Length: 363
Ligand SMILES: Nc1ncnc2c1ncn2[C@@H]1O[C@H](COP(=O)(O)OP(=O)(O)OP(=O)(O)O)[C@@H](O)[C@H]1O
Ligand SMILES: [Mg+2]
Image 1 (tube, rainbow, N blue to C red):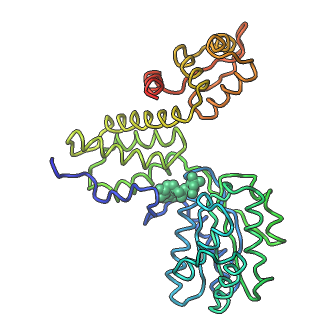
Image 2: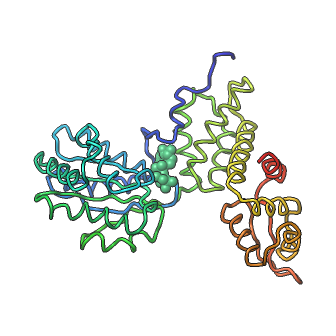
Image 3: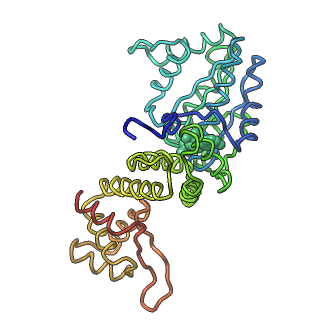
């Protein structure tokens, strides 16, 4: 098997890959296309908020319609720009990115913001192009900052006459629109909802991805079901896609021509291990102590746990609860309410104790 591979196109499993076939999102694509339609006639795109839990295809859908529009754009009708707010720390940086996207080169580093802003929109007006701008992961900006940026787009026509802009915000936060509605200065903002995928939907997407990424017949039926179950359990398609890739690597290690359930299982174990190690790395000393105690006696009552914890760290119950809550938020332990004599909460580990205790000792 040396030199042989199961992967026909490994890049198909990369996070930034835009799939050729985009299943189960017809209605969202139609809504997005509808919002862009005015731009084809020289008018402003209709602003919208794309809302849904992680890995429900929001980024992909917007990139997909923008790409389709650009292909129509030979007739030079509309400019599109995609910016991820996670990597943008200031409005200056955001407009510098747009400048680069529209002019094809970086703006001079000392260009003041107002100049950048004006030059950018004047250019769009002179070319007669409306702009559709997508601000992805919009909830990662502070409320005030995002409000300001949305206004800078939607009020651009007050600075440069004739500007036509529509803003597409992408977010996982259902409260975002309520916080920002006023920034849209009276515009109608439509909401495009991305609900979680059902098990069947996840399965069909994973099938297409596996067909694009692996050679024919490489993924066994049982392995496919195992990946689908794993993705459905955590309601995360992205995890499913990552698992396909890892299972492929595991099968290659065994020099097997097929990916079987055992490869999916080892891939799951390895990904769990990697995840636990990542979480443990960011914990404080107190958090690590508490985590070790929880994993030594999973299911322990909160009161007993506190008494144990106090032997190592001299803190009060409030601080103890804070530490416990953080471990719960990081989803490495669960706190379960129970109705037993003398015990109202039990703390249980979410992972195999071996994995967590070994991550703790090597951290
Ligand atoms: N309907 C679909 N068909 C094929 N692939 C999909 C579909 N939906 C999502 N994907 C794939 O799932 C992964 C996650 O999708 P995407 O990045 O678009 O999610 P998202 O909603 O933007 O998530 P987040 O909120 O975490 O940013 C990507 O690899 C994408 O290619
Ligand atoms: Mg996204």
